Image (cartoon, rainbow, N blue to C red; front, top):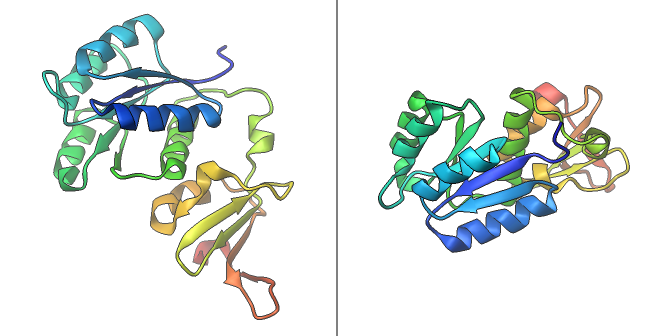
Length: 199
């Protein structure tokens, strides 16, 4: 069994590849990158990634073509990276076999949460103590609609933090049954707790 999941990021924008690679490595993932579709297909054969992040708009082989070719042989999760004006294209990609899509510009927290969810659903078992380190114990929705998440030891979990509409589903899926949900603080500085189903 692999100790760390391998993520393949495919985008013709080197700055995005550098950002994604650095952020995911900090989250504990191994990361491979490809600047175009042809390189991505070669890496898939050589490295057999556990999940692929695939840009839709690329020269030569675009994301749709790469998606079709990958799906002919592999069933690992594929998350499409799409611009704000490409939502219809992203929906088409889901029809072709993609598992999810993330709109650019995206937050690192949103992307990491999506990746973790897809890996878990695909059956990937991450290294021994990750779940203990990443248990969601306290979730706070701030007034600016940003969400802050803490584990059992009171440490923040960056992978789940982000804008409320973007991270809500993933937090509700992964939070402990007895996790505390709150909407800001009251006048005494204490958490304003709310029921999980109302969060």
